[in-house]
Image (cartoon, rainbow, N blue to C red; front, side, top):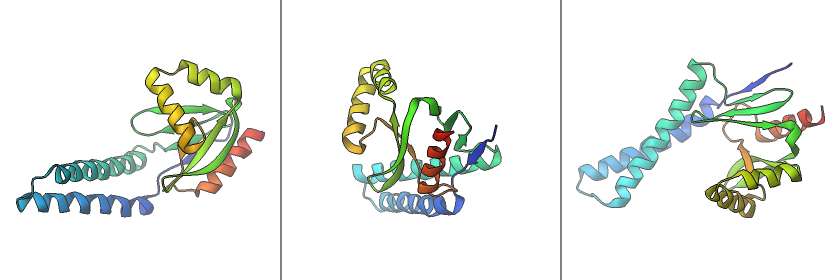
Length: 165
């Protein structure tokens, strides 16, 4: 059984991390000079926590050798650092590339019975999110494909190739 491991790209994420820290620092500078508005605090928290989270993901992946995606013959496993999520190839009809708010993602078109089951098994908040995802992206679930060690189209092609096996 072949296992493919995909990580976040360090170089692609350094720019995002640096920009996050610059915005957080700018917010800190504004705080020091008397601007204590709500927007400044939100800027510091959002960009500061976002930058630290990206830094945490990269360090965790490299130090512990825990990839973001593990692709096996049966499934793809995403480990976001917060939770693991598994997509079984036997449940999927097709993977395809989508753009969601300037972010490349791999849309997952499940087989109809699996799609209905996922909707029925979801909580009321989960159903609302799934319906919103269908309106925005055209799918209930997707896999992030930006800033990885593999290009989004290559990842999509690889997942579709695993479907045919």
